[in-house]
Image (cartoon, helix red, strand yellow):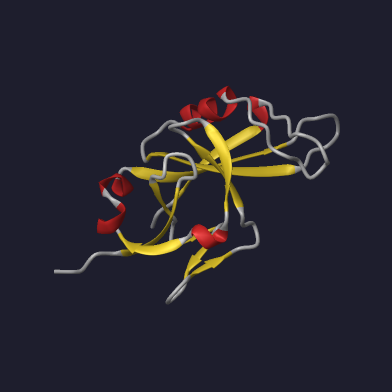
Amino acid sequence: MSGPNLTYHFPCPGCGESVALPPYSRLGWAGSSQFLHTAIWPILFLCPRYSFIREVPKSAVRLATELSIGQTYSMNSLWGIEGDCCLENCCKRHSIYSYGLKDSDPNSILHTFMSINPHIPCLGGHTAKFRREHLVVNRLTMS
């Protein structure tokens, strides 16, 4: 009989639901006593429940057991939405993260993202503009 698994997670900045991080991903990796963040933090996060994007700082990541972060953990996956700004010749890369069911269709994640008409600051000094056909959605594996 094994004990509960330890997982790093952060609260969704919209609805507060606990979002589990994969042990290894482009966001970072689970160390012995901390989550070792990559340089991409803070991340932009799309709350699928309330349909808005907010920044999540690396300080929001905490260690918890699967049991303490609720039953929804086992049903949800972390998703990455990536694309370049399509305003004139900008082409600056943007990454936004969200959560959804493990068996979600990437198109449903993309639909939620595009339906909110996201206003994300671009490194080019303007609001980023996205085209659906230039966006890619991938599930970040949890194991």
